[in-house]
Amino acid sequence: MDILTIIRIAIRALGRNKMRSGLTMLGIIIGVAAVIAMVGIGQGAQAAQQAQIAAMGSNMLFVSSGTVNRGGLRLGSGATKTLVYDDMTAILREAPAVAAAAPGTQTTGQVVFGNDNWFTRIVGTEPQYFQIRDWPFQTGTPFSQEDVQTAANVAVIGETVRKNLFGSSDPIGQVIRIKTIPFRIVGLLASKGQSAAMGDDQDDQVFIPYTTHQKKLTGDTWLRFLMVSAVSKEASYTAQQQMESLLRDRHHIRSGQDDDFSVRNLADLADFADAQGRLMTLLLGSVASIALIVGGIGIMNIMLVSVTERTREIGIRMAIGATEEDVQRQFLIEAVVLSMFGGLIGILLGITSSKLITSFAGWAVVISPLAILAAAVFSMFVGIFFGYYPARKAARLDPIEALRYE
Image (cartoon, rainbow, N blue to C red; front, top):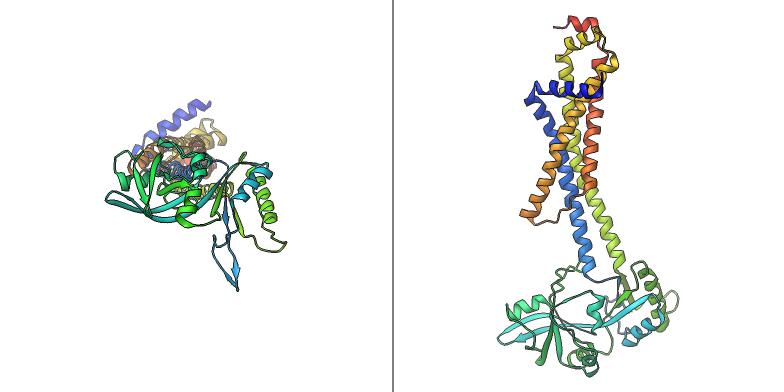
């Protein structure tokens, strides 16, 4: 008997009990839909994390002033004052894996415009900072290197600062006050949202020349941090090693002593987030797969019932020449057809539910073709695995006893 004939017979046999067949497929439908939706949620979260990290900058490394041990008390990060502008110029000169670098000083303060005020973070840096961070401008331009050299009172603001001080108005050309000092706004940055590394609002910042920050706001002569861009993501680890070696040498740190700085590589953060995302996707997919196993058990139960109901039919088929292999193949294909129909409906339901989750919950959901293929293959495997025993039982029936069965 050819395979197409067997499939037609299987469909006809399943069609005799439409309600029972539909309820049996329900477990497979829910299982496949859950696998696709859960894997989509996991991969969507992973993609969103990677996008957040990418938004922080390209091939970026963050060098910050480090901790210090005073009288047995270890002070927190940023306690040392040894990171200076000359360190940055030395890095650019002597670390071949480094493409660009920008200095950073930082404080917090009240920013005032008219009758409105907003407490925010004030960052001092140079124009290349925005290139390293891959941070486009919504309107206006960055301050210039000449502004840095002259310690000019110019500022670039983030979207959160704009909303709280200017509402829907254009801030370019307006004058704000930081600690009674007037600053003219020259640029408005595009929104970047929450930082993947720190969890803070990246748009809630005001940027000014680092020289202005040091001379007019804090009086510091050191830097809080350096933003560094490597020539490529792969070269970021080489750049990290080169910078650490150079800074230890420049800061006269002997072997065995703790660094007075710290270097954070965003490639490590991206790899960690990627590993977490894969783990979460695997976990969600595994939990959803339980529904498929339950659906497979349902198929086995129904097929065992079907074998019992069709015992006499099996006996007649064997009496007119059907072999054990024919009977086994017949019931096995019925189980596979049942699971494949359920899998197809489950795929459609999974794709639809993923889109509904995106529309109503606002979650990022990635519909993976690989997940769809895996769900389809798994549903077929469930049909074969859980249909084998009932099919084998049907094939081993004694034809004489089967014909006597009422």
